[in-house]
Length: 104
Image (cartoon, rainbow, N blue to C red):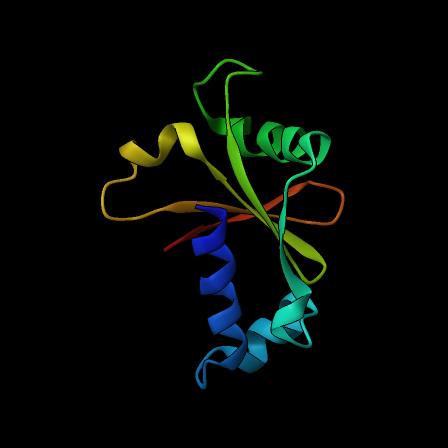
């Protein structure tokens, strides 16, 4: 899942409609600024930020986490099946504070 998120955000860098705004909002200069995060402590921080409004008890989550410039994008792997045709991605700042939901 993290690979799919990374590749989708990398394509946003070059999108003619949203590319300039995306690069400015996320402080992304090139696709290399978008990487998969596998550090368990960072994933735990992202998971806690993601479930702030989720009914899952704390500690019972699994996230896919991607650093996008100066922000992070997290997906709660436990709730993907509930999202229907959309995937809800949490956009987090560099301190893992929730910014917004992004439906893809």
